Image (cartoon, rainbow, N blue to C red):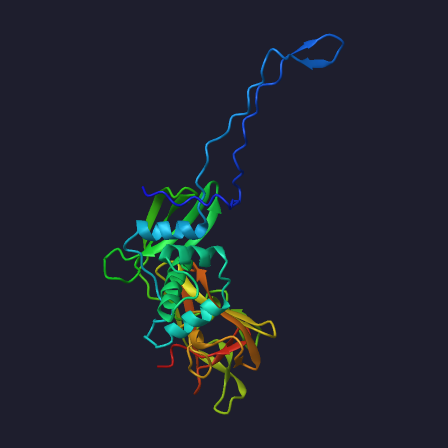
Length: 319
C-alpha cells in the first residue's frame, strides 16, 4: 500500500481520538533518611521512551487515497446533469476566486496536481473537477480515522449504481465494510425535510400527497392555492452534491443543482450577488448529501411554481 505523505508541521485532531501518550520513565531511586526522597547519583534514571512517529494525513489526502483505491468511483456531476451546459469553467473560476487558497483542501489539490499559483484557466478547471469529486465523498470522524461512504459504478457503465461504506485510518489503511446496490437517478429535486408552503402551514415535501393544497403562482404572478397533481420520489445512488442557496434575508434551501428556479433557470446557474425571489444571494455552494431520495411536486395551474423553505422554485415535472 502506498504510504501517504507525512505532514510533520501539522497535527490534525480527530473527534474521539486522543493522541498516544508518552510512556512514563521509571521513578527515580533514592535513599530515605529523614523522610525526604533524595536521588541516588549512582543510579541513572532511564529516559522516557519516544514513541515512533505516526504518519497522519489530512482528510483531503485520505479522500485522494480513496479515489485511488476505487477506480470505478462514480458520482453525479451537478454541472452536467441532467444536460450539459457550458458553464463549468465559470463555476471553476468562481470557486477558485472565492476559496481560501491556503486551506487544507486547496493546498492538497495543488500539491496532488503539482500546480503552483497563479493557476491558468485549464488548471483552475482541473482543480475544480477534483474539488467536486473529493467533496462528494462523505467522511465521518471515528477513532483513528474516518468512516467513508461513496458511490461506484458496479456495472462499469460510468453511472453511480452502488454505495460503498468502510473506514480509512489516518495512515491511509482502508477496510471496506459493505456494499449496497442503490439504483437511482441523479438528484434533480429537493430533500425530504424541505418545507412546502400550504394554506394550512408549512408541510415537509415527503408528506405531500396528490390532491393536497399548496401555494403556487397564477399567470400574473399572484399567490393562489391549487391542488397537487403529481408527486415524485426519486431514489439517489449514494452520496451526491446538492446546492445550498442562502439569501441575505436568512432564507436557505438545499436543492439539486438541476432543480429549476421559478423562471426555469437551473439553480446551479445562480451566483452570489444576484437577486433571487426579492433578496440578494449570499452564497450558492455545493455540499454533500447522503439523503436516500429527493422529492418534487407539481401544483395544478400554468406555472408549476411553489415555495420551498419560503423560496419560490419551479417544478421538474412541468414537461
